[in-house]
Image (cartoon, rainbow, N blue to C red):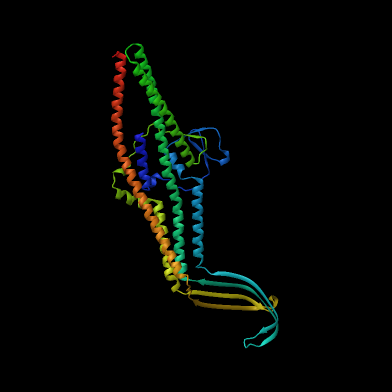
Length: 417
């Protein structure tokens, strides 16, 4: 079990550092997964899941492949990315003019006031048919909005990888928990078999007059304790099975069977590196940290937009071209052009600036929180790997000593001593 824990922790160091070899890079919206014996996966709908228990062999490679394909979470992240892309396109469209095809009919009867102030009885009408081109352009706002939208789009795309990264890390933890629990169950079952054998040996010795009744009772107590450990180990396997099957969206009755019969230590060499080196590597590889940087960049753009956009004027350009007259059938060509500059200053500018500062602070704090968690995770994982390596050495010595002691007990019983 110590070997399994060491392998899990070593893989997790690589995942925490964001090494690409340990995470799936292809992000495609998957269908729910069901399994067939022989480790063959096929896509199916949730309604097609079978109620009977199915043995599903799987290994670490399968876990790494499926963990990044949880349909709902990946679909949600993709929907957010699609929204961010649409918002970026909307921001870019502000650099383009607006086309306004139109047909207008105006009819007036009775009183009307002229420019001098005289009231007149007027009966008139006019019609216009044509199109217009208009531009309401704030260069500073359009520039910053485009930059901000691009950063939000990049953050949303990295969000897909971040969700996938978290799923892979969680799945690896759960998989190695399952491997460890299965190994624990095997050890408990082996202990029960040995306890049963010990009871038989002690009973035979007692019958032959070479043993004591107390030895038989101690052997039976040990057997009862071994049976209790088997029950607890079996429950732990079922719990680990249920958690991992739920994470991978597998059928409810799936019985996951790790194909690794013997888990061996995995050495990436990461545990021997300094924490600072691991942290530097993680900060450059982890998608969640890259996503946080994009959000900080977007917040920087918002602060700059609120600080400078009001200083530059808005440019309003337009042109109308069409036919104008008493009716469209008696209309002739008409062209109108206009241009103006205006500054937009309102009392909400300081409030928007404060809101932008607050969003920037939130992005910075989220980045610092992620870094703090990353540093803690690295320290814990490295400490566990180093401690487990020592435990493996001690466990091997303990196994060797226990095996030698068991051989001596068997020899003594055979020789009647």
